[in-house]
Amino acid sequence: MVHLRRAQPPRRTGPKTQLRARYWLAALMIAGLVLGTGAVPAQAADTDHSPPYSQRIDLQVLLPDGWSESGGLNDQNVSVGRATSEPGVDHWHAVRWTPSGKVSDLGTLAGGRDSSAMAINNSGVVVGQSDATSSYGTHTVNAVKWDARGKITALSAGPGATGSIATGVNQTGTIIGASTIGGRARAIRWTASGHGSRLKLLAGSNTSRASDINNHGVTVGQSATVSGGVVSAGHAVVWNRSGAVRDLGTLPGGKVSDATAVNDRGIVVGTADAATHLGVMHAVRWDALGHITDLGTLPGGSLSQAIAVNTAGTVVGVSDSPNSLHPEDLHAVRWDTAGHITELGTLSPNDTGHPVAISDRGTIIGRAPSVPGTVNLPVTWNRAGKIMQLPILLGGDESGLTTAINERGTILGDNSAPGEIPRAALWKK
Image 1 (cartoon, rainbow, N blue to C red):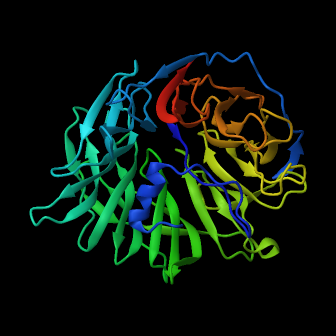
Image 2: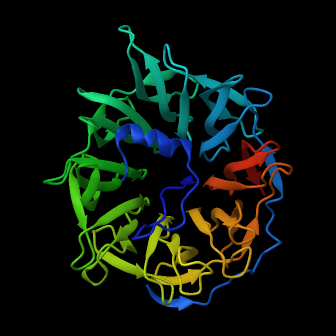
Image 3: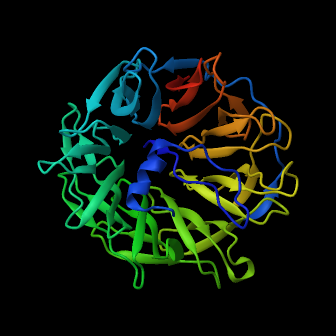
């Protein structure tokens, strides 16, 4: 199972640390998406220099001075993303990289100039989006998939859809994504053969988002109401294999919840508020039966978010803390299967960190600044919570981030080449 980054930080009045804008988040805008007990002592500035992530493979680009950005990784170390495709012009093509970093241009739909690859499964099926020009001359953006040989197929989003994107694919080939219908986002799921179905809404909702899918076809996300461009009354939901929707609810007295990830045991993680902290989100975990647990925050904190979960049920995310150098800072944390929270190590004392995924072996990937307020660097945390910076290209702005980790322990992400040119990379043990 490949573990991908899933979610953005929580927000309250005065947004917390912002994520670097990524192309797939921008792409989602076509679908109208705007959408614990007992703490273990923190391991701030406890850097681990021993883990063996010393090998960086710089993934090839399509042009000599071109840009590239990572998207997804499978367990064979085949990765996908996008790369600039025309000199001097801001156009990108979806690409696939071999384990050694050799690039292949996956191209676009007929008449298109831009495409991007978001995810790849172990069978080599790639999903993402491409623009196209119809026989009537109209320009559209469509969800697509590429088979293992690189053949592209448009995925139908159904009648009335004005745009779509495929964001994830499981090991059986089931695909999730979003479409725009009447100016609102709708979660959609496609079978391995490409048949698409809009996922059902909760009563009273008019928009939805699919955040994650497990290998049994269970899909999680949010069903909400949008009025005047503002999302309200959103609840975390789970769609079963047949498409039936179930409301996961909120913490007692709460109004809002959101599901960000699901593992193959049906454990769901995300955020929810409660009567005691309306509008301020806490990390939560739902068991396979839908029972909710408040994972809490670091001591003295007020908000948190669960971002990813591995098969065992270990959760990673972020929490604020009164020890932060700045009030808006969020700290990388891990919750064990009993719900105990641990603050993960930082590259400098009391600084921030942001985990994006956790492998079944317990390795966590993410990003963290080396000096407070500076650019982020790609990092890993081991099972003890110790942090290690991954080796990056020198001569650029010396920044980077991680995107995915597979069961071999290989990490996919991005760093910066000289001239502040983004380049995708693999890190291996």
